[in-house]
Amino acid sequence: MGNAEGYKQADLWRQPARRWVVHVDMDAFFASVEQLDRPELRGLPVIVGNSPLTMERLRELADEARKLPRMPEFIKGVRGVVASASYEARAFGVRSAMPLAKALALCPDAVVVAGRFGRYGQMAGELRRVWGEFSPVVEPVSLDEAYLDMTGCELSEGPIREVGERLKARIRKATNLTASVGIGSSKLMAKIASDLDKPDGLVVVAHGDEARTLAPLPVRALQGVGPRTAATLGALGIRAVGELAFAREDVLAAHFGLDHAQSLLRRAVGIDNTPVEVPGDPKSISRETTLAEDEGRLPELRAMLLPLADHVAWQLRDEGFHARCIYIKLRLLPVKRVWRPGGSGFGRLITRRCTLPMPTDAGQVVYEAAAKLLESAAKSTGLGKGEEVVRLIGVGTASLMHTEDLVIRLPSPDGKKSASAKPAPPPSVDSTEDAPLVSHERDNRLNASLDQIRERYGFTAIAPATTVKRP
Image (tube, rainbow, N blue to C red; front, side, top):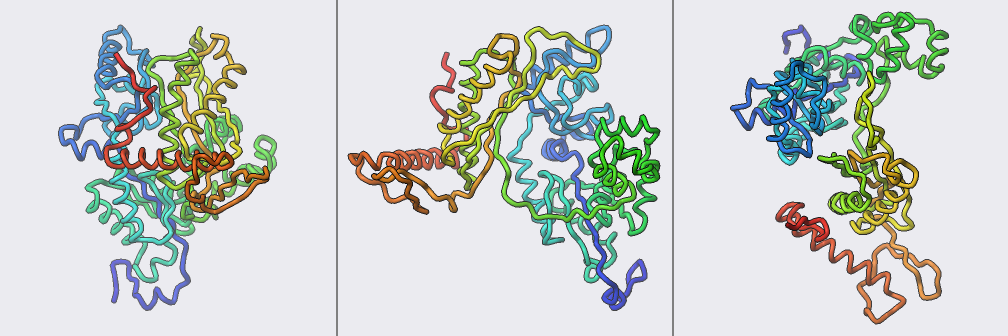
């Protein structure tokens, strides 16, 4: 039985399996979901924004800036980050991860909507099911992006382009959204290919065409080539990937080191042996927030840590993990700020971390550790001296282990450590030597009750009393 490209199945079976990697990238995913669910947004510049300010307040600030003699580069007072931008907004230069202050300056008529990450997660679940229909080896990069190992698919599924077309059609049928698909001999080439024809594109880079496809592209198109590397290459007269491919190794090594130089030369001709890997356990679980107003008072900052720690602990329990490492993240700005050309205006990011004697999934334990780290950070920065304020604050956990594999170690009556895979039933409260186990069981019951309430009514249905603002 033949096909459009002249293949016969019997002929295909005689060929060796060729490596094919598919990169799927949904087009402006969050913004496209909003336009799908709200038809009145279709055709408009839409920004899905993460901001502590209300959408109404963002609109007021944008309208005020529009009245100025000249639109500023940043709109003063706007906080938050662009999570996604529709292609109508991208036409104005708006990009994901851009500060909202800059995005609204570029596109003051943009419709800013709050992200609905539960809805995006639901759509991502549909995507994962579709990806799994086409390959057993899927490496998600984010909710809307993934690599699929399709090595050997031609032996049973036909020409690789037809496979890509069926994948795009299946995604559209399942989600009513479009995807850009790139197919190549490696993850590097698949990613490059998916960027060549957006939105709703399909590009196949044939084996042997890697260097020719890459040659006219700017060096920034290569993964791992950031602004600094690109600037150094530009100073050497290297701006296109094809120019990089013919660069001298010793010259590159003098600027980047031998290993990095060799890596650049390999990637410049499309060589990438990185495997597509099914993801393992998460490395960390964290929660952060950008403040509506900069804050430098430690009591207020400590109060902000509590709901963040509570949320992180809830997520630990929900995913079945305990954490051994606790860390905080702070973005600090000087109280007295002077604008400098080329400066970001968004301060410096610092982290502080500690290791617990026992792994935990309890919000109070996470909070207490985070509060101590905050005190430590205040002593070593301008925060404690009134010279710096906080714009962003976050709590995170790392060194995760599965709860079901956890060995609970508690003191025995003779003072030595005893171990048991599962805690024993709660003993009598009168037993002093068993007090740690009683406390552990009490915390477990409390957390289980909290989780049941949140599972039924949502996370915000119950919160620590100290976090509730009263009139």
